[in-house]
Each structure stands twice: as structure tokens, then as C-alpha cells.
Length: 93
View (cartoon, rainbow, N blue to C red):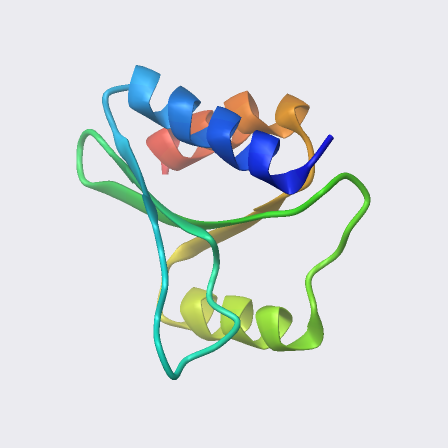
């Protein structure tokens, strides 16, 4: 399955929960996650979507650690089976 399909399914699932999965682009700051998930109740997380079996690049690992050090949740999903559990985890945080 292509990364774009996983990303679309994630965005649709967040929308079904009443939230937004905004595309995140940060000029001059490479390696940021693909989406910011905003869920009801003020829940927020950053989500990187990958094709099945693909891993974070070294710069993406550094950005993940930076965001987590600031107290944000950061996820990397490489399959649609992970979507529901990830959204549940964000909501319960």
C-alpha cells in the first residue's frame, strides 16, 4: 500500500472522530511529521506516515525526539491497522 493511501485513511479516521488531521509543512525546517492530529478535548499529536515497512530517516528521528522533548506525542504509522489504536491513544492522553 502506498504512503498516500495510509495518510488519506488516517485523515479520514481523525475526521470521523470529530477532529482535523492537518498537513504539516514547515519551510526551512526539514524532517517534520506529515500531519498534526487535532482531536476534541484539546488533544494534539504529530504523525508521520510511511509506506509499509519503511522507517524514519535520521533527520526525522531527530525531529521526533525534539518534539517529544517539548512534551508532544509523535507517532510513525506504516499501516492502516495502526490507525485506530493510535487515535485512541491520542484521545486518552
